[in-house]
Length: 514
Image 1 (cartoon, helix red, strand yellow):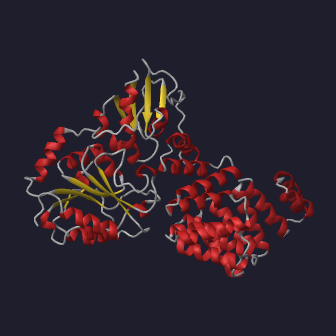
Image 2 (cartoon, one colour):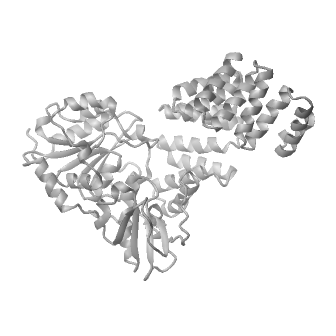
């Protein structure tokens, strides 16, 4: 047993496994061998076998908090999350404050986005083991998600003090610093994480976003390619990746969407630049954008992601095009309008809206997206309503959202002066045609303001306190979108100043009764 434990601690898992299997052949109910073999199977990613070992150990001793905690880890790896939670609960019931069980339950609660519960779990783990660096680090993540960034920073600092080579803590610390509008310090934290773990994809990608935020495009675009190792899986087209080196004269290139809808709308402007190099351009995008982008300048063919691909010579993700064209602050292809609307649809929507008698303003306050940062960029309709005049009749307000969240429905539908079309907006070509008949769009940072700005429509964009690189720092305008006006939160998750400024500016619009 001692030899097996020594091998386990040295990371020699297969050798340790042989020893414990031999012990179990002699003593099938040896609880320590069952538990340790279960740990080894987990580390070898044999999670079903790990669970079987833990269950056998529990048959022998049903009062081991550690075994129930390890069993929970196996169940979690098998995506049996309710059972995993129950196993962690059982471990803590057997031994209240069991540090590992509390920590493991906190990690699961974090993944389930139950951040208050996760914070309580990490606090219990730290109370039982104050030097638990991982618990301090994960506590920082929970605090940040709860909007308590200054406390999160202190937790990451404590984690790093206990474990200076904790690369994840350095990376998360950088992200919090960036959120706190301290990007130069964030850069140092990201670089420290990378010095510790050179292949830390998340740190590389965060570093690139921070560099872009600060206007360091040369390094930023290079680092942005790390997104394909940080959760965005690259696609294998069995054709060469083009990043600007090879001649495209007489060649066919596939430009394909690789991030979110807003990113596709942002970067599709480069199709014209690619075509100017002599290429025939095929554009593959999300289904909701296919009809909208059929007339995009420079594009020969637009297809949906699910469609069969025609032959092509090269490919390039849309988000890699700034790197391919070595875009810097002076060469951003800043176009007043680069997407056109379907004129037949535009005429239909103008007729649907009727005669214009007062300013028409499109409204967006939240997204239907499951994007993890949506809670930072979106707000409730109750909050958003405060930026609109008490008397809605001074404007013609049009909701550009296709979906109203359940929590917003009662109040929104009581505001009968706001036009809502819902499922009549079948895809983004309909939304574009509707926007074409408006005077202004007021929106949080969803895909809609990207569309409105690409159409050249005046757009007031309400930004949360986080720093998306596109909007840079402190600016009220955007070098990417000439028609944009930016309204920025001064305090995280506090929209009051933003909404007050929008309300004041709406009252000054031409044509508004005074």
